[in-house]
Image 1 (cartoon, rainbow, N blue to C red):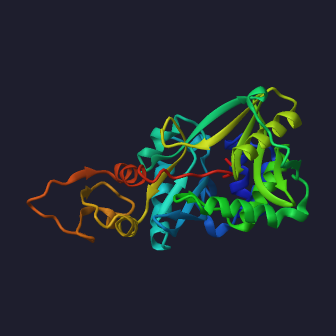
Image 2: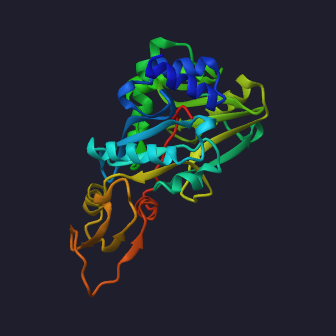
Image 3: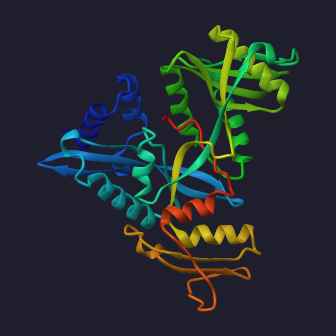
Length: 339
């Protein structure tokens, strides 16, 4: 078996995804060069993929890596293999110029597990439910199911990309990734509803059924009238009286994903450029995968230096603590990540 075939078989053993989704992932997303694996007795027993994504942060676009498909064969669990694999992946990310790593835990219980490798809950969201009677759709906009209309794919992507780029701290979707997102939506029997006026897009809703409910995984709208028109159409298409939709939230009540700083100095430089008056005295310890991140960081008077000033009190941080400290004021957002 090739490495790809072994990793695919391991994925099927560890996750409950449909064969159609697994085939989609390994045909269009998986590559050996983004895979990290551990072998035992001549076979792959633990693996993950590092998928590159651009992300807006501090007024610029930074390189991030999304950890996908992290799994270990049941017979080899509780031996520290995934921790070892994550350390190896983080080291590779650092050497390849990645600034930030992200992942979405498959289960809530795994949030604590990934925290031990430096990750912090970072991508806040909220779920809101609205009844049809509460909506005020506008006759100015026509809302159409364009899920299967591939002639409009570039137009759909351009609108999505424009909206996401306006978010100051947001994971972006390259065009090739958007094609995979749309294929996944079709596999899930979901719908892409598009609101137009005079032929121009003014909003989009990515809708799926989850456990008997209709959930809008991403809702983009130029105004409230467009939002209500999209949600009303979703209720009509799926023949329900209520629709649930996800929105970015700074309240931190729910988290979709976690993040881990890979390059402390680069991330601090961006923050300093955005907040030149910032003062911060941080002592980072315990990053075993990237020891370059450990040390004293003095941020003052527009400069960031690796120096311990004896007359200052430094905040002791793990890399997980530092990630939370750095990102919480930015309210990072991610969506449509094939989770």
